[in-house]
Image 1 (cartoon, rainbow, N blue to C red):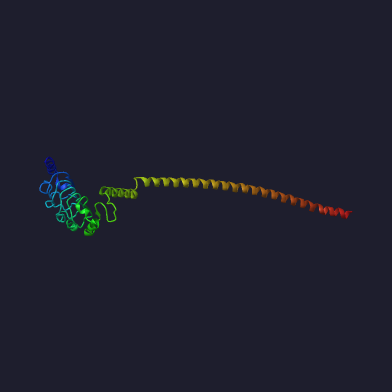
Image 2: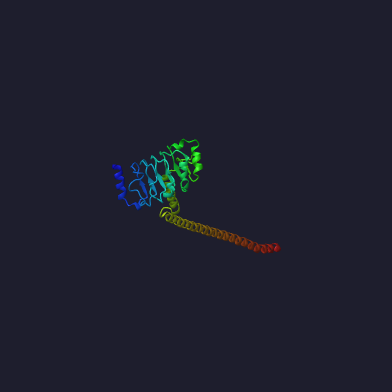
Length: 258
């Protein structure tokens, strides 16, 4: 009784139109309902009522935005057809630990077109031969039954999946945008490097140009020296030839006198 009062008071003190997640596990229902839970929770997306001694869903309020419903460890044995009317957008339904015995009870879930995951663990229906194959054949829209798909691949945890998606988005944003100032620094470094490179190249060109000019000047001086020496040799040779020419006529005159 104290638990029921506490839950009722908590629901009344909340602004129901702003609540998106509500956990009422282990409180006690009365005549198939929990006092304070009504249609004013119009934004509710997740509702958990595990172990609240529910025997029926007939008095469940209409929650059109509800996507995940936890009803484990209750006394529900049928009447699942009301879910399609009151919670048409359910994607996850946990009925484990209830009194569901046969496939005809589960057949009422065919109208939940968005249902992807159904949990019937610890229900008597799981003792039927070819239980899994029969449920998958009956409910074509579901992907996971009792936490596994038809190939026995485990269903991902919803919270981990959301975290991974968030991390991937962050990584993509970082890859696209990059840390602030990174590209600017790289550009500055590149510019600085290029400036240094150009400066070094200019210095090398100046050094090469100077050494080349100095070599040319040295070569020109050597060529001039060679030219002067050759000219001097030629002049000496011409002088010798002139002397010979002068002496030859004299020699000839002397011979004639003889």
